[in-house]
Length: 191
Image (cartoon, rainbow, N blue to C red; front, side, top):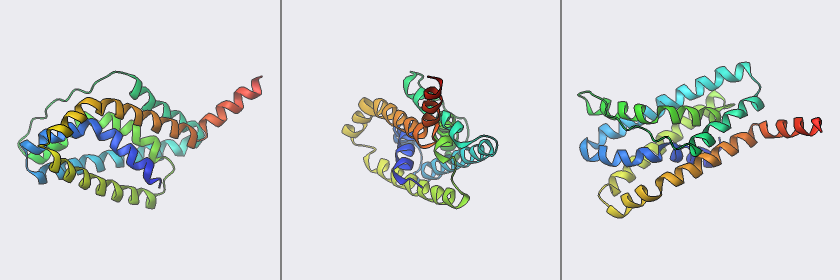
């Protein structure tokens, strides 16, 4: 498990939701936000991993490297997520529903190529690590929820940082899978 890639991926995928969590922490209990966010993260990680396992059973790893173009595309397109509200009574379900409605597409498309090729044991370690990161982020956001400087910096630079991270993740997937090596080798044989 590449901890630095996993950390970068987690932060990049969730960076835009951190701002929303600042508002959720003011509206709902810390516990509801923490466990709703954790449930959403773990659910999307599991779906990404299982989808990757299915694809990997039918396609060679280097060909699946084409999935590295997804995070690059997401970084380059200017499609802002609609941060819609989810109707419900329980704060846990409100946080979970909000997270899934805002972040499901990005999480699935970004984590799927990152989790390709991991064993079940490594994936279990990945889930444990994501759980730790989730706890740390929510505790950190709770600590800075009322700090105007931090929230203004996230508002100002959060979008560009997220895009840079997405591009870095996409390039890593293209290189690590061997996709670019196969393309270069194919082009070299043509000429």
